[in-house]
Amino acid sequence: MVELLLVAMLSDGHVLIEDVPGTGKTTLAKALARSLDLSFARIQFTPDLLPSDVTGINFYNQKTQEFEFRAG
Image (cartoon, rainbow, N blue to C red; front, side):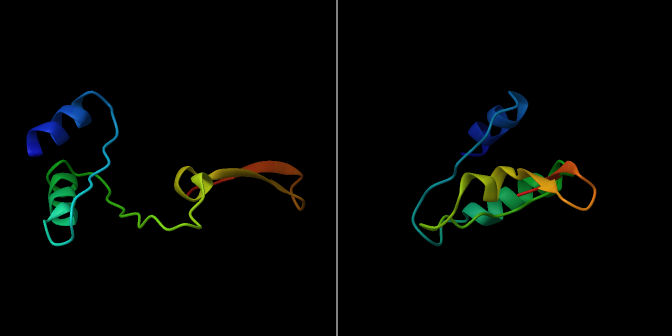
Protein backbone atom coordinates (compact mmCIF):
# COMPACT_ATOMS: atom_id res chain seq x y z
CA MET A 1 0.00 0.00 0.00
CA VAL A 2 2.89 2.39 0.73
CA GLU A 3 4.23 1.97 -2.79
CA LEU A 4 0.84 2.80 -4.31
CA LEU A 5 0.54 5.92 -2.13
CA LEU A 6 3.97 7.10 -3.27
CA VAL A 7 3.08 6.49 -6.93
CA ALA A 8 -0.10 8.55 -6.49
CA MET A 9 1.84 11.37 -4.81
CA LEU A 10 4.51 11.43 -7.53
CA SER A 11 1.90 11.46 -10.29
CA ASP A 12 0.02 14.35 -8.62
CA GLY A 13 -2.98 12.10 -7.98
CA HIS A 14 -5.46 11.52 -5.21
CA VAL A 15 -5.93 8.51 -2.96
CA LEU A 16 -8.97 7.15 -1.19
CA ILE A 17 -7.91 4.59 1.42
CA GLU A 18 -10.68 2.15 2.30
CA ASP A 19 -10.42 -0.82 4.65
CA VAL A 20 -11.91 -2.22 7.82
CA PRO A 21 -11.39 -0.29 11.07
CA GLY A 22 -8.09 -0.69 12.90
CA THR A 23 -5.78 -1.37 9.96
CA GLY A 24 -3.65 1.79 10.29
CA LYS A 25 -5.03 3.86 7.43
CA THR A 26 -4.88 7.16 9.33
CA THR A 27 -1.47 6.37 10.82
CA LEU A 28 -0.08 5.57 7.37
CA ALA A 29 -1.47 8.77 5.86
CA LYS A 30 -0.17 10.90 8.76
CA ALA A 31 3.29 9.32 8.56
CA LEU A 32 3.50 9.87 4.80
CA ALA A 33 2.39 13.50 5.13
CA ARG A 34 4.84 14.12 7.98
CA SER A 35 7.76 12.52 6.12
CA LEU A 36 7.11 14.70 3.04
CA ASP A 37 6.47 17.85 5.14
CA LEU A 38 2.86 18.08 3.92
CA SER A 39 -0.37 19.01 5.65
CA PHE A 40 -2.76 16.27 6.72
CA ALA A 41 -6.53 16.36 7.07
CA ARG A 42 -8.83 13.41 7.64
CA ILE A 43 -12.33 13.41 6.19
CA GLN A 44 -15.10 11.29 7.68
CA PHE A 45 -17.66 10.61 4.97
CA THR A 46 -21.23 10.96 6.18
CA PRO A 47 -24.54 11.02 4.28
CA ASP A 48 -24.81 14.82 4.63
CA LEU A 49 -21.27 15.57 3.33
CA LEU A 50 -21.31 17.85 0.28
CA PRO A 51 -18.57 18.15 -2.37
CA SER A 52 -18.08 21.80 -1.37
CA ASP A 53 -17.30 20.63 2.18
CA VAL A 54 -14.18 19.00 0.74
CA THR A 55 -13.17 21.22 -2.17
CA GLY A 56 -14.40 24.60 -0.91
CA ILE A 57 -16.81 27.09 -2.44
CA ASN A 58 -16.87 30.58 -3.94
CA PHE A 59 -19.43 32.80 -2.23
CA TYR A 60 -20.53 36.39 -2.71
CA ASN A 61 -19.57 38.72 0.13
CA GLN A 62 -22.19 41.49 0.25
CA LYS A 63 -19.99 43.77 2.37
CA THR A 64 -17.10 43.85 -0.12
CA GLN A 65 -19.29 43.09 -3.16
CA GLU A 66 -16.77 40.49 -4.33
CA PHE A 67 -16.61 36.74 -4.60
CA GLU A 68 -14.44 35.05 -1.98
CA PHE A 69 -13.21 31.50 -1.73
CA ARG A 70 -13.91 29.58 1.45
CA ALA A 71 -11.73 26.48 1.67
CA GLY A 72 -13.35 23.13 2.46
